Length: 171
Image (cartoon, rainbow, N blue to C red; front, top):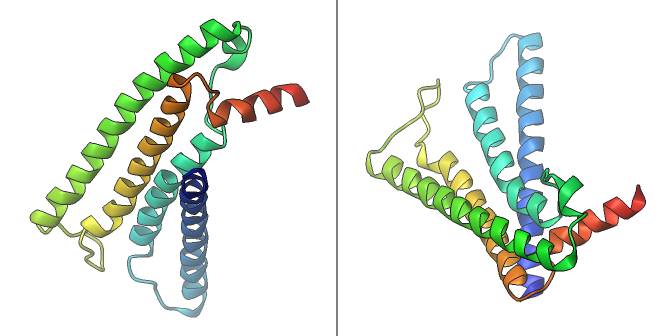
């Protein structure tokens, strides 16, 4: 199961990176197109869709790897017992929030599909298609927070804490 979860987080990170590459290629094509007198239709729209996808796909991987910003100045000074209680409390709040965001994003995709909403750009795109990446990324984040919460509830140290502790030892 651990291998499956790590693969999911890594795939989420790779998808985020691929979206950044897609943005770069779209903007490069637009620049080259202007030099040669042609346009790339809806390049800004597709770059925006890819930016949203990159952001949301990157959330789970970044959380798992301990890359999210946390105020560790106080947290790292706590003894083991209070620190575990604090982590469990914060992860409970994070789980509630991330589950709500995942639900809201999935509902947004559902509504866009039902009402057949399309983008307003030069090339109309059914909005549920780019919104799906946002929903999948938010689901992945909720699962990553759930994984960390389960570790904290079991008395284990969540994966991201190990990375934070390693970074603090390097300083």
